[in-house]
Length: 106
Image (cartoon, rainbow, N blue to C red; front, side, top):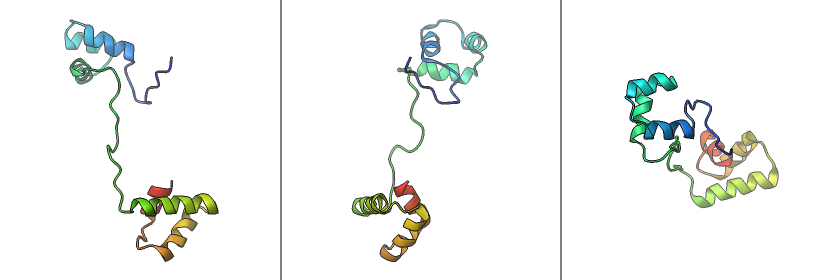
């Protein structure tokens, strides 16, 4: 247990291991597991059995570390909605873009 796959995962760790250790052709394996041959090739080449992380490797921000912390602390203390935090922050910071506030507070 404990194997949590993302909703679109077509293979389990057991199946991935079988694919990596198999000497059958790529097309036979694809048919056997009802997978695309590209998926079989991907798992044959991989050294590990875990999914790679998807999404940003590093979070980019226009706000400084201090600004991010102060906005988060402000929201925690006031329990304001994100829209209210945006309105208040527009009076106090140079960053008037709603996306910055939502990105760093949420």
